Image 1 (cartoon, rainbow, N blue to C red):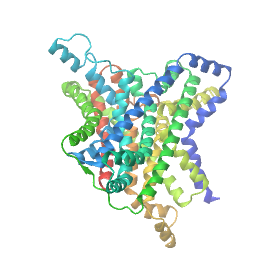
Image 2 (cartoon, helix red, strand yellow; image 1 turned 120 degrees about the vertical axis):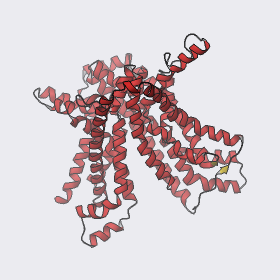
Image 3 (spheres, rainbow, N blue to C red; image 1 turned 90 degrees about the vertical axis):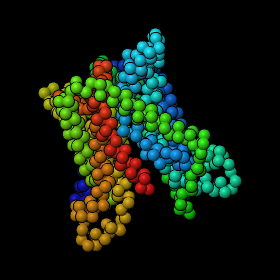
Image 4 (spheres, one colour; image 1 turned 45 degrees about the vertical axis):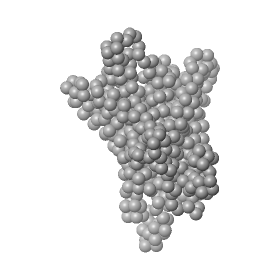
Length: 535
């Protein structure tokens, strides 16, 4: 009986973490004549626009991140040119920039009243708008492409370094020219990695609320918030959230399928190959072209947005709300630290149970928890607030609504739903590097249960645990959709304040919290770049 107690408890915990998805499924039990009317009205009015805009955005972003990510990965992996070692890690810098921060930075600098257009009109006497409006769908594609291409870059670079290098060398020895080696060897081998990276980028695109709301783009995420907060129609919000979740589930399936193909290719290509082939040395115009291919994404995705935000920050340094900034930072750090500790603790418990007692309850618990990161923040919000509405309807005097929406419980619950999977992935990677023979030896010496976890596993998992906590901490700091709705009263975070100030066109004041988020986002980028250099 006691043997099954811990796995069953973990399974129940995983069910609690997947409650938002379960609640969305249960909401369709309310699908009566009123629900059909709501769905029919949406199909005749807003639903086609949501679907068409989201589809156009996804197709454009998929093409953009595939071209930029694959181009940069090919340049730094297959070729040697001046600055290549710098770009290997510099191409990761846009990961530190939340997409909505990039959107605010470009808008502040390029809008009609921005410094660029004002300066050109004053210098050259031009009248009217100098550049087209950026707050539209093409502008969002630009922002998402240069914010999310590192997903494709990372996976494609790994694929090319581990599998394509040796085969490219073999093709060269057989007399194949460079263009043919790239076309028939490198690109086909990197195709699963590109597909997986594109799927991850599209999940982030569909889950975004800051860029869509600020640019006025009618996506599913923006529609969910409008239906719930503006029209006070929880049924319409639930239906839109279900459609968005179904789309994300499809992308997640495609990503997992691509990852399986990547693992298969790794096993096949890794046999009998030890040293990597030497990259092709470039000089002259080809080297300049490779340098340009790598420099432009870093420039558009990181350098220019940071410079655009530094300008108003430096110009209004004396008027910045430093006292309020300290409070916003304290709220963000407190919520992020608490969530990181809880998520990492849950991940350690799940990973330890999966390693020591890999029964079906534990496997199901791990699988359910792993789904959380793919669930958009808007879906989590609707999934958490739907049961609150049911409870309040059944028991009007209940305080559940207050506990969920007016305390830290609701927002921390939402963070755990979404980001426990991030910690679990890091901890499982740490366990994968730990041979099971250590467990057998410890058991022979009489160490089992909590002693095994504390005395044997914990010292070896120290780096993986710190990495898991850091990743969750940074993700929570940048999280906007769930925080915007579920944060406690008088607990504005840096992400929320950045969004609110930018929405009110106070972009100069938004620069301070935005740059603070960028600084925090650099931490996992530094960790990731060090990990890649150590391979």
